[in-house]
Length: 298
Image 1 (cartoon, rainbow, N blue to C red):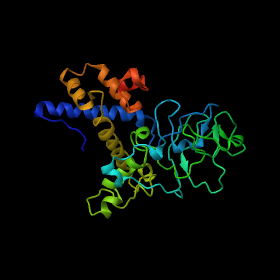
Image 2: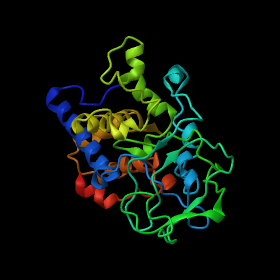
Image 3: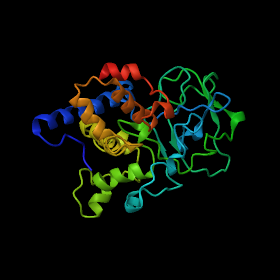
Image 4: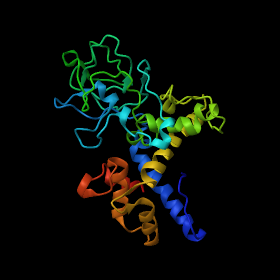
């Protein structure tokens, strides 16, 4: 598998590759770059309009965007199962990025459920003065409602033990799960080095420390940014370039789009749906998020 840069006659192939790059960058701009986001944010509310802290374990069931929790999302195929990260219930991690609007929920995090009490839900309307407004930098409102402990996410989880597998990188919402992060480690992290294969970041074990995808392992910000983009490229190669459903193939449609002069807005809209809803057909999955902004950037 590789990032597609075209095939066939060079004069034509180069255009296929350039448009694929442009699609990748325009979609990534809206998904993460425009708001300087790397970690997935807590975005799904419960039926009371609050954000369960256990969203770290999975989001999207209520809105139909996901049918499995993050631990079970992006399961590796049988021939790639050995690449997946193992779930460690004692692992702790906290996201580096989170939404910045007034009352926004805190960064996703995971930690052991030693006391067995579980976690509550974030109420954006509560005052944070009593707690010092120190859940994250820039907080002005919002807090965990003590009466909501324990509170479940849309998949029924009421704690965050072992839930360190939220999405990260240029396409955080689509890069969650032990398989996606495990593959990054298998091909570019410590796993590759331990297996005697060429590795770009052999000193980093992304399975033991998934937060290093966003935090980075280096004092060089360019190196750290590179890992976010590599995670994004992995998403694009597997989830977009590899997308084939109901006779609709991304690569085939990309060729048609280029051959016909880049005028088929329906193709771009379908790609936007694949990125945001994992589905190209509007009749099955509705409209993509932020479509106008995506078109403008492209």
